[in-house]
Amino acid sequence: MYARTSGEHELTFDFAMGLLNDNLLFVDRETRSIWSQLDGKAISGPLKNAPLKMIPALQTTWQHWRELHPKTRVLVMEEEGRPYVYRNRRPGGPRPKKRQLTHDTSALGLALVLADKPVFFPFSELDKVKTPMRFTRGDATITINYRKDALTAWAEDQDGTLLPAVLAYSFGWKDFHPDTEIFSATSGVKQHEAN
Image (cartoon, helix red, strand yellow):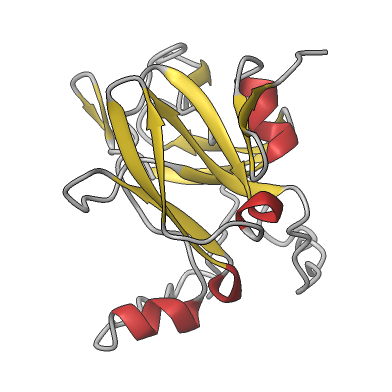
């Protein structure tokens, strides 16, 4: 999740057609700049190369969210009644094909930047360790939480504050961060070898 402001611009975002390094793109209504979802930077348009500030957020299943926040109210979008509205789809044009309801989690994990170094925690490796677990890099110690049943992981600082991180596929994260370190249950972290 990103803050809506970039410099002096307050932006409203919609999904855009297309992918960059196997990751979704989005577009702002105000300048029509195209943004990278995983990298958080504009890749074209008047705001090209402008960054967005990542803010802490928890991505999880609806069931897990309801366990944490039982009084949650749901926003229903009247416009097409769908969570993903593609602004450049022509009215009357064909609708996107229905997506598979299954989710391949074999390459999914928690990704974040810690002490200026990208780190990726594959769910397959988090399955092998007891969580929550402490992870230290330099002077920074964080806690990694993982819930397989809720398809989620998240990072907290020493005070229990949620840290900015993203659930991502390893190949997408490594495309944007070729120097990422990959967590291993047996050896801690290992350096990813860029292709």
